[in-house]
Image 1 (cartoon, rainbow, N blue to C red):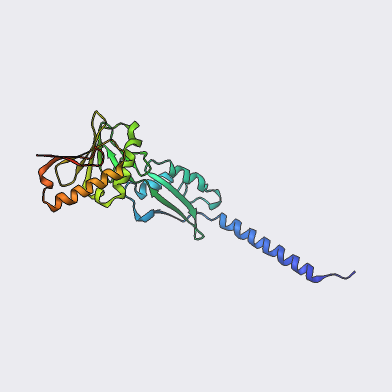
Image 2 (cartoon, rainbow, N blue to C red):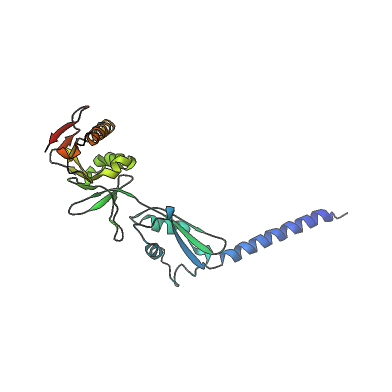
Length: 238
């Protein structure tokens, strides 16, 4: 019987490749983590520090820093980071040069509710705790409860998405009748918004009024500007 040495050589070569790959994988998995890097999306670490993230990862000589790569549960680390109330999303992965990378996306506030218990409303309309290291420059909101966050959220989104409103609106207040009032950064008159409805029309009317009053140099002559009435701006002079 003639032996086909070509098949034997091919099989031996395949076995050698499988062995080397398996050996390399085991050796690579057994390597310990030599460095841990915390990165913030867009370079922003306003509300939470790198040190806080490291503490959440339990980075010390006895836990993560010198553990082998094969026993590190990346999903578990991500879940730990995601539970922090100032973190929106965390992505944790390992590199070939034995580094553990944690990419952190922070939650961003749209407004700050002022009262007995102050807190932010984030970009998804959810309650967000204040940061001990940074205060966001967002409108101050008063007269609402936690149950009314969804009510004021569309207004906060509109302010955030509109450069003119973002530059001018500093306060939002709801009175006992359910009407909303807006305070301006420079001018001392109040804007009576009324209910948070038909915002596009109300904002369009206010911008038209503001542009004309600015041109006529009459902005300082008003104490209240009401947008609550249908398709009109009603002004009260000082």
